[in-house]
Image (cartoon, rainbow, N blue to C red):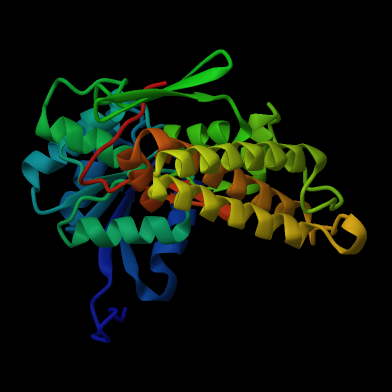
Length: 340
């Protein structure tokens, strides 16, 4: 294996612990690709894991939780006590809160869901081998909160941070400020991202979830902006014009500038969606139409949030990624868990 700096390094020695041979074989192929790691042992249950690890002296043990005889958490605890230099990466089917915290308490250096991609698994193995913690953003806040305040972390997240729907409005609480937003598609898209930090959503999936569908529609392409989207943008332009008029009257240049910038962005998007004679341009694909509509809806929502809580708007502007794939990725060193 060659490091990023070009030096040749020895493959990471790994033991795989899972009661499904097919799954072990899959992970083995992922890890041994291009000499990244060498699987030096395999085990089907917790009892066997300890014996295999003792005989093969691995750097990292990739451990399932649901195992016969001895479960993965007890096996992790035993390994950590007897072989503290061996790092344990839990690769489990569930990220249930209690299970994650029990694994950390037992000595696991990382925790990853089995649906993680090949590169995510390799990166987690690399990090725990290097003595780092390896948790996806969706779990990092939970783990850090527990490490800082053992025994008091709960499912609701830190008090004062909430994003919850109440009928036709959403109540938002952040850093001591509370305000309400009218229910819109953009607010609902944003809520989906906030509730699952670190999870990457395809724009089509956000649209499908909002519609209550299980899967996204990838059928024939339609207009870049559908009728509902154009109507929503017209309403938003009217609201922005009112904001500008009030800002001019009150001498609030910052608010005026912010509103004009959003108007320009919407006008540019509409211009790109409408051709000569006001005819709709056709989207290259349904995916492209979803990307455009979701991105603009979320950006419009962030602009509304800025009117109420500039600090929150700044936080979201730097942690929300929009486009074909959308993601909320807060800094794991500053955990924020949203109540809903």
